[in-house]
Image (tube, rainbow, N blue to C red; front, side, top):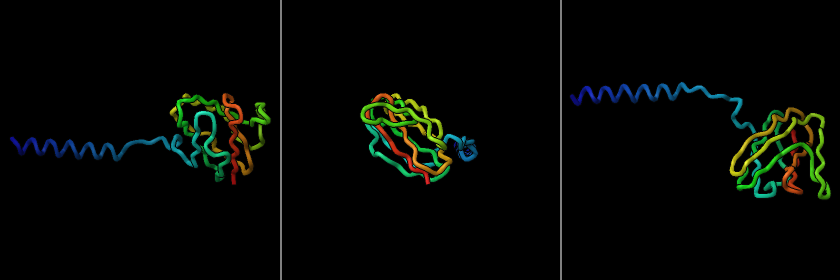
Length: 127
């Protein structure tokens, strides 16, 4: 009886390992670039450098929502903009979550900002 139970458990364990090893992964959702963290009302760093083709991973470390779009805050005024070669960015974060923007396929310097938090700017340098 114990021999049959042992064989059944061994077969079950082997099948579990084989199925887990054959998992299908959607690589389009995997991170391919650096990460910038967001606090309650700011980007933790003011600029980041990427390689061409990278996505930028944004992590909201606070319970604060953020809406990240192309452009900058200039002297306390939101200035949406379309920069040649920049991907269109319109990413919403609800707090304590993450997501990515991009890919950034053109070299240059691009800007994104949070529409909710005044002067929350990020400069993205793509090499």
